[in-house]
Amino acid sequence: MKIVVAYKWARNPQDAEVREDGTVDFGRSRAAVSEYDPVAFEVARRLADATGGEVIGLSVGDTSIGTSLARKAALSRGLDRLVLVADDALADADSTRLAAVLAAAVRTIEDVDLVIAGESSTDLAEGQVPLTLAAGLGWTGLAGICDVGVADEVVTVRRDLPDRRQTLLLDGPAVLSVTADAVVPRIPGMKEILAAAKKPVQVLDHASLDVTPVGAAGEASFEVLSTSRPADGTRRRVLIDGADPDTAAAGLVAALRTIGAM
Amino acid sequence: MNDPIQTCVVVAGDPAVSNLTEIARSASGHTLAVVVGPRTVADAIAGAGVHEVVWCGEPAEETPVEAYAPEVARLVTRSAPRIVVGAATPAGRALLGAVAAATGAAVLSGITAVRVEDGRVVVDQERYGGIAGRTLAVTSGPAVLAVDPGTPVVAGDAVTPVAPVTPVTVTPRDGVRITGTEPRTHDTVDLARARVVVGIGRGLKEQADLALIEDLAAALGAEIACSRPLAEGSGWVGKERYLGISGQRIAPELYLAIGISGQLQHMAGVRDARTVVAVNSDKNAPVFGRCDYGVIGDLYRIVPALTTTLKA
Ligand SMILES: Cc1cc2nc3c(=O)[nH]c(=O)nc-3n(C[C@H](O)[C@H](O)[C@H](O)COP(=O)(O)OP(=O)(O)OC[C@H]3O[C@@H](n4cnc5c(N)ncnc54)[C@H](O)[C@@H]3O)c2cc1C
Ligand SMILES: Nc1ncnc2c1ncn2[C@@H]1O[C@H](COP(=O)(O)O)[C@@H](O)[C@H]1O
Image (cartoon, rainbow over all chains, first blue to last red; front, side, top):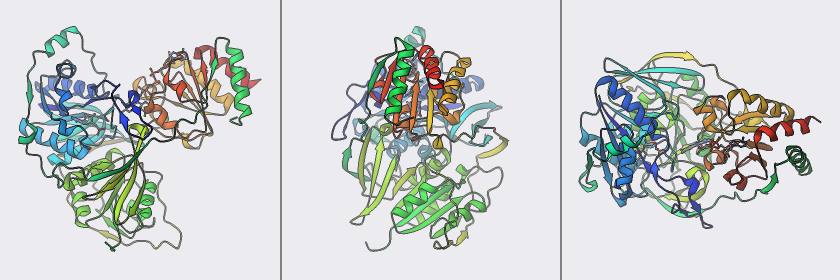
């Protein structure tokens, strides 16, 4: 099977600073492979190994996704090769735009059986890109997949809905997004990181991709009127030393009773 | 410009869409619901204050909601809506993704309000796990909104006329089939109703140590919740109990975060708690910047002391 893993090179908002005016400064936060995407790499590797196939990493974003650090971070996690669309024009692209560019890239790879993605990205955390991508490709799109199996080239997947567990059989190409607990991803060692430097990387030219249909030809479909910082600074932040647990517990309970929290 | 705003609510097999119909109502125009799922779902939506229901017919047992995505996109775009609202769930997002791919519009998530100003659709949105907010005016294509679904809708009062349900013949995509369904026993805990909630995180060393947390919860009359790694990593606590941007959001009177570092993805789930207490052995844990009272100490010593004090 030929499997593409869509992964994001993303920053964690945990380390971002939200300014007074609501704009977000990601300056202090370092980009990394999006937190749950290694699960997708691992699922893909196991499927490919079981069927004698290939795993191709695919990422779309600004030029930072093409640095040697970023390439190695992905390639050391069980990929055979990498395809990138790196263009600063994609820096703040919304999920529809990202999905449209990903779809165009998947079409250039050709004969892809399956695209596997993470459940939600570290930065936007919407869980939307894989499903919009599926629609763009005209493929089946399923999210929340916690198990993927293959027998005789036929893929079956499982997902847990609130009240039932469902097994589905795919008989066509599909985009799957896998849950964080689908498998435990391998942690790359020195050997994998060294090998990563030798694996092929293909950089596709954004401008020459056939990015269809997207009515708004790459422009955002909205205008930002204002930004804001949600009120969150209203906590008391009283710290209690717990060196003596009994005193700390008594102090905490007394404080909670005083403010009527208990 | 003076035509009423046309809103489409897309329903992905599940009648739990109270927030979707509410968003549609706040745009105060004409609302069309496109329903995938059994007739009972279409009927429930028809009584919940929408004007018209288009129903995709009784689904075959083997056909998942997602197989309807292309047809839903067709039905939605045909009515040229200004606003499309769907559930921020896997199936809901599959339907919204099809609308997005067909129209080029972005799917906007984290929506807190929608209104029409000077003929433009304006939405308030939270991003990056709720750390930042922004207000957008949609300039082209429909406003496609992914909304936390809410509770099941029930037919409204007598004032709300029941909307007509029009069945349409659609062909779901093949390429995927449901081949098995098993009931899943899950915890029916209602964290949303609990006044006091104790959340436990990776500070817990072993599953057996949950007993400590259960004792504390009993002394407080609290429900137990957790951070994501305890539900989806170790699996020590049920998935129904984790809090945060991907889990549940609650607003109890009191929330105690025990052995939880306080990453924003977790804390977003308790932002509306009235009082937040943290117990953590690392004085630099981010949770101490987001709590009302923080005890710096080992949970294995603090929690039993707390339980004893409460019982006294
Ligand atoms: C897209 C995305 C979505 C996410 N969604 C969610 C979500 O919905 N909910 C969620 O919870 N997380 C979510 N996360 C994960 C989140 O970022 C954190 O990784 C997670 O919340 C950390 O859980 P934790 O605090 O239990 O573990 P850790 O961060 O490992 O923290 C454990 C804490 O326990 C303390 N500790 C250790 N031993 C003791 C002791 N003996 N006594 C007291 N304290 C002790 C440590 O000091 C530490 O602060 C998401 C992440 C991403 C990228
Ligand atoms: N720019 C991107 N390039 C490649 N894959 C992406 C990109 N953005 C999102 N994805 C994939 O889609 C998943 C969900 O992302 P999101 O919809 O942003 O939450 C991620 O975990 C990735 O697998």
